[in-house]
Amino acid sequence: MKSTKVFILGASLILLLALTAGGVFRRDPVDDNGNIAEAQSDGQQIVLKPNNRNLHMAEVNNVHLGESIKKQLDSQQEITLIYHNKKDTSHYYDHEATVDFVNEPSAEELDQITSDIKGWVIKHLDSIYIFRSTFMETPEMINYFNKRTNIEYAEPNFILMQNQVNKPNDLLYQENYQWNLPVIGTEQGWDITRGNAEVEIAIVDTGVDLDHPDLKNRIVKGYNVINEKAEPDDDNGHGTHVAGIIASETNNNEGIAGMTWYSKIMPVKAMGAKGYGTTFDIARGIVWAVDHGADVINLSLGNYQPSKVLGEAVRYAYSKNVVMVSAAGNDGSNQPTYPSAYPEVLSVAAVDYDGKRASFSNYGDYIDIAAPGVYIPSTYFNKQYAALSGTSMAAPHVAGLAALIKSANPDLKNTQVINIIKKSAIDLGEQGKDNDYGNGLIDVNSALQEANHEVLKFDKRNKRLFNWHR
Image (cartoon, rainbow, N blue to C red):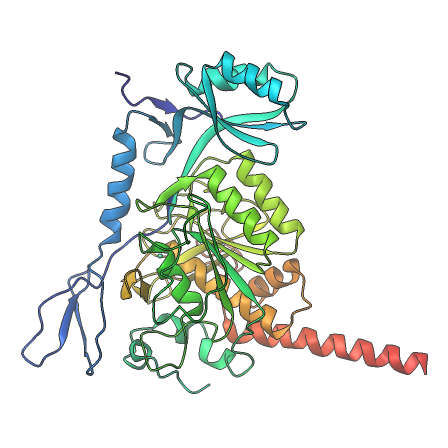
């Protein structure tokens, strides 16, 4: 039997993990006053008062969970491990290759290839095919395809992992659990806009709990990339948590408040129950979301190796005026992660209660912006609520802001939305853009004022044109 192979990175190879770090809200016994005591990972304790409501707080330690996923992948025989440096790793499926053809291959060409590699086609999207061989290892397969004439590129099948007005009357907001929204000026921003139902945010992730009471009225038609015959329901919890930060139903006396009160969530399930998926499936999810009307795409996932198939999907979305937001990663590393490091994507670092870069948050010159990412309460699968930490939780704050900006001014291009988010940020750390916070902490109120100002400038231009024509 072949043991797991280890490569010191030189060239090109991945697996995408959901970028979550830090757990919280583990279920603890009820105290003498009938309150539910929740122990935080730093040893402090907070108390959630049930208030006669049946809140289902999940028992989650997602720091341990993320490390556990990596260890499982490291030990699987059909997974190859790549070291980018002493601690940062990526993974791909061995005996598989992702291939983009210059021209759509004929049946005869596919038959010849599958015969040569003694394998078969696993799946395909347009001109991109994933092949599996019964005897060739991935480097051999790539070498084989690169010698053929009709090949645009060949690369491993990488794996990506997870990376988590008047005040609303939502219970956890009223109890001041949601520190994350007031600190970025969300309440003041809601005086400008609370969102628009026409704006749709795609969550390319593990799916969304379609029956969650705080989400079920906010969901539009989605897509299950992994199993097209199934609904994009969440069997992991990560995607549901991300979705709630953006658009949990607000002011409904239940659970938490989302950043946008009215915008819709488009669930795209491209990662499975274990919290990871391939670059091919993530790319398919991005393309599907774009083709079905997404205005914003949240990608709380990533790994350290760039992928051509993922890069193509990102550039396609960007060309279609979609705002893409991605988590920077949770290894406290300056190694760039993808899709976060692509120039078309807003890369998001995480800050804690004190406005400091979270200890787990990746950093580097590719960071564009920062947002709260420590102990963030949100919806969780199986109709629960949980507080998680990670750049996965920071990214949806930025996606939610992008949706609010599009609600305030639907005519803005994606480049303008991105520029407003950067320009309006609160400068943290070193003066100007830096490696820890990028352009700074998002400021919802200032960003929406800027978006509103753009509307006024547009109206004034129209008025001048009208007067000139008279």
